[in-house]
Amino acid sequence: MSQATWTISELAREFGVTPRTIRFYEDQGIVSPAREGRNRVYAPRDRTRLKLALRGRRLGLQLSEIVTLIDLYDRGGANSDAQLRQYAEVLASHRAKLEQQRRDLDETLKEIRRQQADCEALLLARHP
Image (cartoon, rainbow, N blue to C red; front, side, top):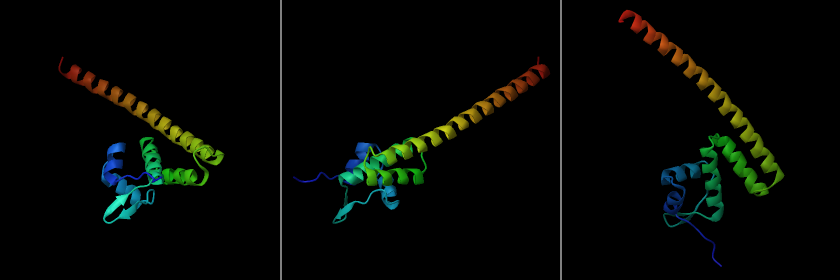
């Protein structure tokens, strides 16, 4: 039975990214395609690692966090306790950062609304 493989174009199309994005993850050591002549050939391991990297990126994780989680996946499988604990910790930390950013944004928007109202009131007072 032959093992499934993918070209860079096939993976780019499947995941909705550019080949340049996949090459970036190759440069970072996340995927390591084999070569058939000048073509990159991606194995199931590469596809899974790319999928995990793109998922981490969608969540807004830092590249170092993504690499750590992918390396845990390689060592322990998808359901190892160590990987799940580490993933839960990374998610909790990232969520806390995002929630703080949301609070900061809400406060900034509140201040902008206040200053905008002050400006409009001053303009109305000058030009009734």
